[in-house]
Amino acid sequence: QVQLVEFGGGLVQAGDSLRLSCAASGGTFSAYVMGWFRRAPGKEREFVAAISGNGITTDYVDFVKGRFTISRDNAKNTVYLHMNNMKPEDTAVYYCAARGGLLLSTTIRNYDYWGQGTQVTVSS
Image (cartoon, rainbow, N blue to C red; front, side, top):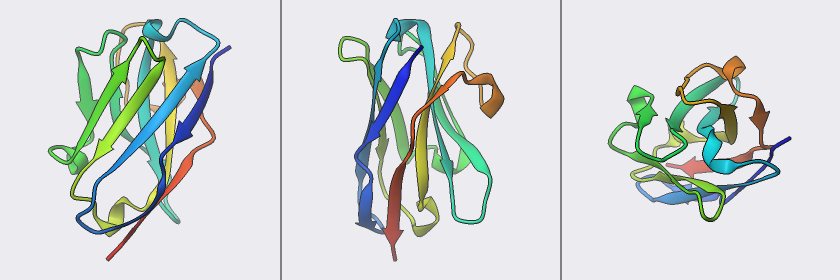
């Protein structure tokens, strides 16, 4: 059983940067693909980014490409989401998730473990 806890959410202004962290425990961290998802007010949860267990392969949804970067530190059992040039439409609860195996996925149901989420609010 893997436990995930997100940190780093908060209130920022448009154009600011923010880094989210997700600390994992209870499993072999490098064996999991890690993903970030978000749920904006009134919308469904959606994929944001994913990273392979070794940190080499990443995937992003189009609307964050060039602004967000996912990374991981397997020695610290932590995955990060670096968010730059933030926009009001980035306002959401951000969740990290873990998926066993090697293949990245953008699909919610393919992830086995989830954190509780952290609120990010971007003011205009």
